[in-house]
Each structure stands twice: as structure tokens, then as C-alpha cells.
Image 1 (cartoon, rainbow, N blue to C red):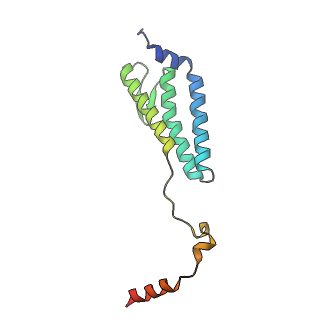
Image 2: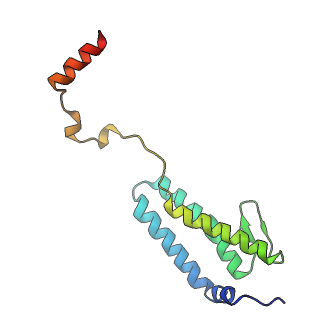
Image 3: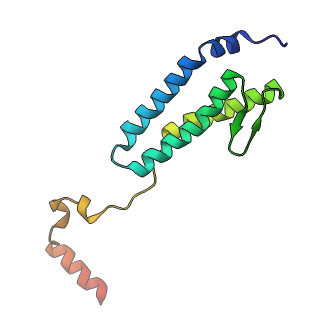
Length: 130
């Protein structure tokens, strides 16, 4: 059996604590950023869970899977670490997900948005139509 890196041994020893920290961070991020916008909430949470499970699978020594592919536990350790690092990077990028651009609804406007045009604005509009 290969000799493991000290840092990797430390990560594997605390893998359940790391999993708990990742799950708590994902839930907290999703609740804080997307409360009330449930479509974006679930999108962010599912993306973080998808890539977070690959990181945890690497730490526990199992199959590191992202989507339909992945690397088994007996694959090259460098490739497994690279795939887990990529999954962790995408997991962190998902914290910056800001949702999809939304059009402002009529119901989101305030009464001050519905003011009458001034005389200058009325005059300008008639000049442009000539």
C-alpha cells in the first residue's frame, strides 16, 4: 500500500466533520441568498450537493463521480486528487451563483415609479414624433 501524504491523512481523519461543515455551509448559503426564490434555492443546493459528494467520496476513498463518469478507488491517485480538486473548485464557485436575471414585475414597483410626466418630458415626446 502506498504511503499517504500527511495532509491527506488529516483530511481523511476528519472527513465527517468536513462533510458536516460543507453541508451546513451549503444550506446556510442557499437560505441567506435565495430565501423566497425557491427555484434558485434548489438549483444552488443541488449543484453544491452534486460536487460536494465527489469531494466526500474522495476523502472516504470511494468512487469519485461527477455526472455519468468518475474514477474508481483503484485509479491513479493523482487523477483522483485532480478530479476531487476540480469538484471542490466547482463547489466553491456555486457559492457565488446569483440566480438568473429577473424582469422587474409591475407588482415590485413603488408608487413613486408611477408619477406623471413633467411638462418638459411631454414637450420632448411631441418633438420626437414630428
